[in-house]
Amino acid sequence: MARKESITKDDIVNAAFEILQEEGIEQVTARKLAAKAGCSTQPIFRVYKNMDELTEDLFVKACDFFQEYYGQFIRQTVTPFVHLGNIYIKFANEHKKLFSFVFLSENRFGRSMYDLINGSSGNVSREIQTATSQGCRNASELFMKMWIFIHGAACMSLTGDYDLSEEETVRMLKDSYQSFK
Image: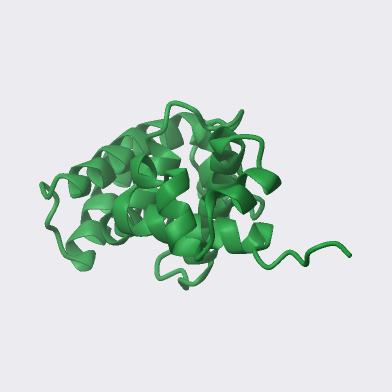
């Protein structure tokens, strides 16, 4: 009679995700993961060939987490890219380890930065369409300018160099949009 599997793939990914959130991707090791999941390393390597394979599943889970996070917020402004920028900066501030893993990783498993922020919901595409409908002649170029600004602000929050309130952030993003437009 075969032994019943007690640790599932979901259990492993969820335990790895907890470590990632708390300590960062560098700390997602087989031993730490086994301790967190309450098993030996054997079930981990029965499910995954290696830690790189697990890291890819973890990356997908982290991307999905960002998209769910983004989806929680109701749009508060009609100015294009402000909603996206505010949430992205807020995410970086509240989920530093996840932000670093998803948006600052060299290996994004074949996804571009645009793919990551656009997501399956079309977050960026919707913003570009809004800018175009409001008379912007080159909304894609405007997005690139805004994105460099937004990403820089988000990265500043990782080091504690960004301390603007949400209201100040929204005002700054609106001003930037008007300047770049």
